[in-house]
Image 1 (cartoon, rainbow, N blue to C red):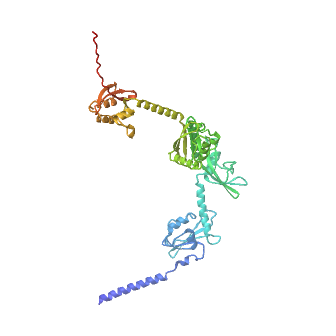
Image 2 (cartoon, rainbow, N blue to C red):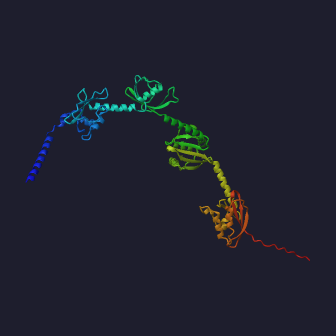
Image 3 (cartoon, rainbow, N blue to C red):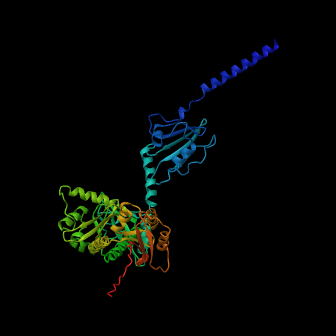
Length: 506
């Protein structure tokens, strides 16, 4: 009974304590008394335990603050640009009110920090109106960003009044360059580059040099006219100018080198305009130098070649443009190589090759002498073949490596072989194998292989060979020039003994 009464007492005390706490929570002072009215545009924050508890509409709109997310430290990051003395940590309870002034002298804004009933209020006001204008605060922040951007820019920037032609503003890079060029500690109001003829909104390259400089500094200057002021910005391009000079010298060196070539060279850039040619191209194409110097397009180049009859006459003029397009496409892939036979009897070898950065090059070479020599050589070979085909003896010529290079009609008929019917090379090993199949006693034929593939002093020799049909042959093996060997099979003629009869007249 005693224990039951004690438990009832404990439960009653707990209920009473919970009711008391709830009544205290409901009866606690509301923080709204320290907040600005909702319709005000002043910037005001209310923090509870260093966490943003409430903020005015202006503060939410200007700083994109989030209730329950932002805290003292995020607000310090936002406000310290304008008020650098903003405390690093939350103020302790019962701290006196604190007032901070803005960093810039022209900024009359003030920041108040006060602690009321456990809540920390941060409010910004402008003394002239009693409250801060958000757009002015944003203007100061943007001004800070612009100042930092212009003062840390690596290139000179300056403004000139169009009426007085005097410098009215410049950045730190301009001042450094001015002092370097004029050997002066303080700059005057004269422009850095006098008599500057700059086209608005266009890059213009100028050189600046002082008496102590070995070479000038090159700058690309951009001018923009805004009202009665012209804003100039310059970028140093010494490395770019040096590379352009090096490229120009390299092209000149190539031009001098190509001038000694007998092959005509025409290089077209990615826009398919002629950018480089040599004197041999003029001689081979008969195109005037002024036409080539005018950087003609690739299509115009081929049109003039056709007009000068320096390329084969097209069969169909309607498809001429399409054919040229195919030529250009093949040259871009490095696949174009043709032989042009002209009406004058000349023969040109034309090749198209791709070049870096989308350029293509055409090489035109006069191979008339080479073609004439090839034709004469081919005619001599045909004459020699015809001559050898008239022999009754079977002839076969093997190179120093043992490859069959020539045989006559009698050889092909005797052994039933046609070397031209196969794509692979016919060797002495292959030939001896065929000979042995058609001969009775083939033991001596293997010596021919050793003779042809051997080195050192070689002497001609002869041996008898008998075919399967008992036809006697005589094989002659003779070395010739360049280590080659000729094997000749001759039909053996049976000799009849000559009988001399002497008559006795007595």
